[in-house]
Image (cartoon, rainbow, N blue to C red; front, side, top):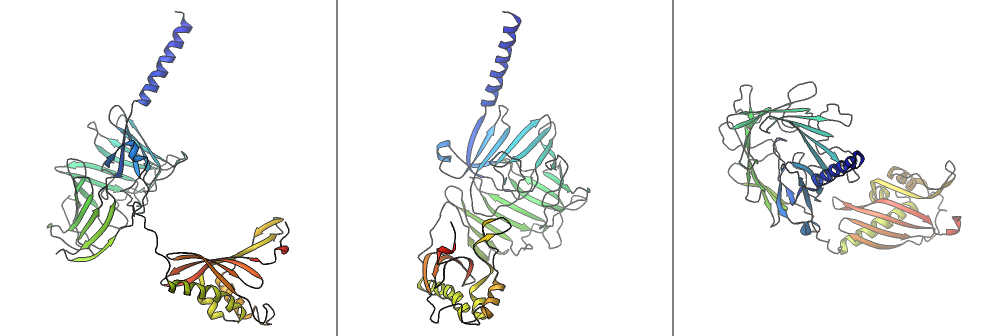
Length: 424
């Protein structure tokens, strides 16, 4: 074999090895991520494993691992209506994770493959690990690879172990120590983890690393997870481990889930387990159509819609003020001399329409002596509606919304009934 053929063979062998390495990954599918509201130190984990066929028909995450069983990519096909925590969701379409000696780097991408920020509003996360593979530091970077702060004003996390606790300290770009978040007053914290890596307790520590109360008397919050990995209970305690009320007005929180791990109900309790409040959690898995509109709503929609025309015709600014929403957007088709083409006109505001109701028809020459006002409700869905108005000169489409029990006009698109006014 001559040198040229040998070189070609070696290149082909290398390419085959690269392809084999790229394809030799393990892929797992999960319905949900394990909930985390403690620290980015907590490992990303999927719960409720499913197969590829099931995943194709439901909300899910895809986890890819390399030969060393290291997580190298997460694809987010999870769609949900529930509120997200900055630590409880990746908040991006794809996370790419690279491993280099004692560094783990996470970069974030949108569905088109463009770099984006995650829920912490950072573009890159770089973890430093010790020789045992345990996290010791996390740094945040922007698109230019410059150090940056998260939405909690944190630039770096530092971790070290002391007995059963993982101690966490956080700093901004000026190396000033930061609380655990912008809305929760915990300074230095001590984390106790279960064998599976889920958080068991998070303690507020003083400079001597002793458990201490914050300014509202809370020294720890403690978590309970069920056998499926669902976060089912969280409690707040003082430095003596006695249940106390936190700054949000609860001592104990409970969370309920359905058979496949969808979060469906929340309860808040005082230290004696007296119920303070509870609510159902909206979920994308159980979409319930709105019931048919009531006769009361239909009557109100007709009155509000026709009230707009009556306010103009009969000079009733108070009626116009009632029927128009503060965010009114009224437009029509016009001709832009600047653009030299047809365009949508600048929107009229609620304030302008109230002024029109004061004087636009003062001469009583804008409408026939007996105006012809007709209405057709095209659709009502819960708290939104679409209406078509016919009057002597115009055809108009209205969007209405119901806020605080009252219907009002949000959008109004109109055109002259005489279409010959519009050249084609």
